[in-house]
Length: 168
Image 1 (cartoon, rainbow, N blue to C red):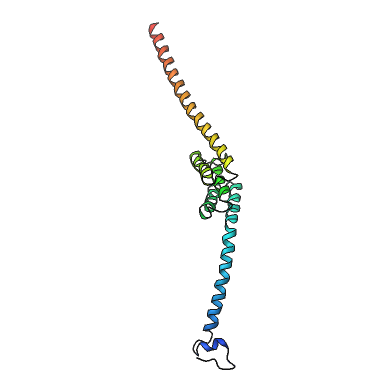
Image 2 (cartoon, rainbow, N blue to C red):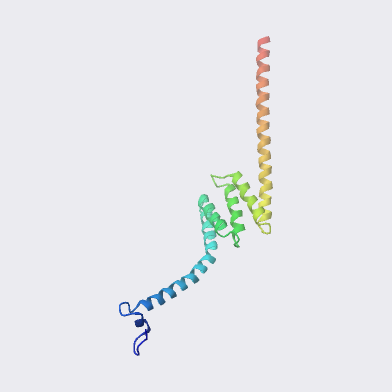
C-alpha cells in the first residue's frame, strides 16, 4: 500500500483503523518507559523495605519487622542490605522487648550471617551473639542440673527427717 500525499502515516494502516499504527507506537513508548521505571523500582525496593522494617522495629511491631527484613534477604540475597537485614532478623528475634523472642531461631539466623556473608561487617557481631547465646544455653543447662540436684537433696533431707521422727 502506498501512502498518498497529504495523508498522515497512521492513516496508511487502513481505512477502518486509522489510528492503529499510532496506537502501536504509543504502546511501544509506554512499555519501554515502564521498563526504566521497573529497574529504578528494583534498585530502590531493598532500601524501602529495610526502612519499613526499621520503622516496624522502632514501633514495637517485631513480627512485621522480621517479615520485611526477610523480604529483603529473600528477594535481594546479593544486595547491599542483605547481610544487615539477616543480622537484624536475628537481633529482633532476641530483642528484650520482643514478647515473642525465639532464641533458637536467632541462633539459626545469626549462623546464616556468618555462613552466607563471610566478608560482611555484621559477621563479627553475629559471631559474638552466637558465643553469648551458647554461654546462655550452657548456663541454662547448668541451672536445670542444679535445680534437679537441689530437689534430690531436699527429698533426701525429708526422708532423713521422717526416719528421725520414727526413731523417737
